[in-house]
Image (cartoon, rainbow, N blue to C red; front, side, top):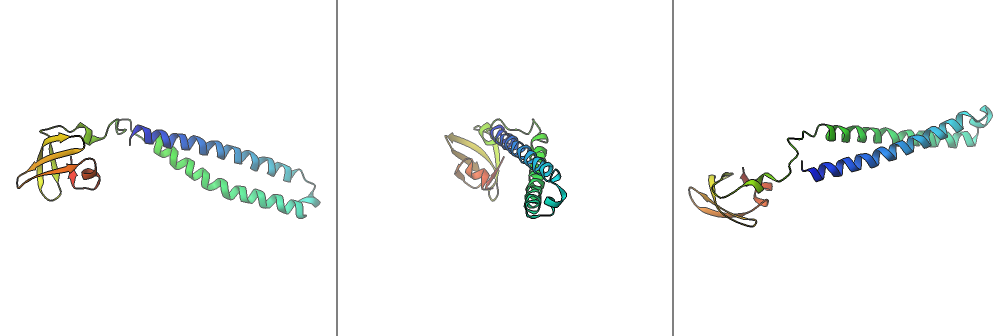
Length: 140
């Protein structure tokens, strides 16, 4: 994963955690207000409306907690060695070997910007990078 993508996930996680905390506070305040109502009001229309709000907040909080947990797993399990500063294809240079899904092994002979000329046993072809890698035609 690229560092900027990991940072986006961490920023989103922080925003969601903030929203979760805020919603939890509202939930707790509403629940406390309900608990402090006289029993006769808890059983009335006002108490029913408050309980419905508490239940709705519960239903919103559970999935958010799952989202936070999943995003924490992504960010904590991001192995620093696997966080890519540059894309692997950017490290390629003339003379490097790559493999085409049909033509087999080939050698990079020319690099002009995003155009990579690769010499295979049967022919020489030009590919646009990173498209050729992303579409699965070339592997490094």
